[in-house]
Image 1: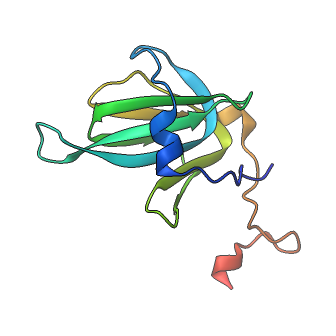
Image 2: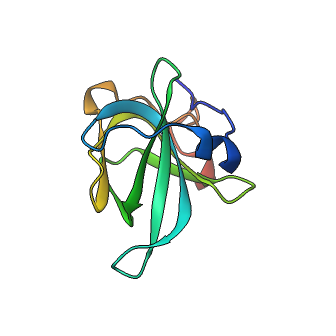
Length: 127
């Protein structure tokens, strides 16, 4: 399954309602952007929008300054407006809103990376 290629702008992200701080949810894609506030750590606070499997957008974060990943199939892209898009073809669960947001990979659904060549299994980036 290929990654959702939906493009979301910073203006659209800011219009998505926030979830409850303790709500966890499943997704395959999250958009990340600094919200202009400084965390006590001295780093910028981050806002996130995740897209649930049914297409519903969920905003979370706002007070955190870091993301931690559990799993090995996460990818990241920088959108033209500077928004970061994090995705995982396996899907992942987003943790509660704490100082660090955790993304937990769903290991039972591991899919082959879409940039793999069918003829020899090597990444196109290795050629």
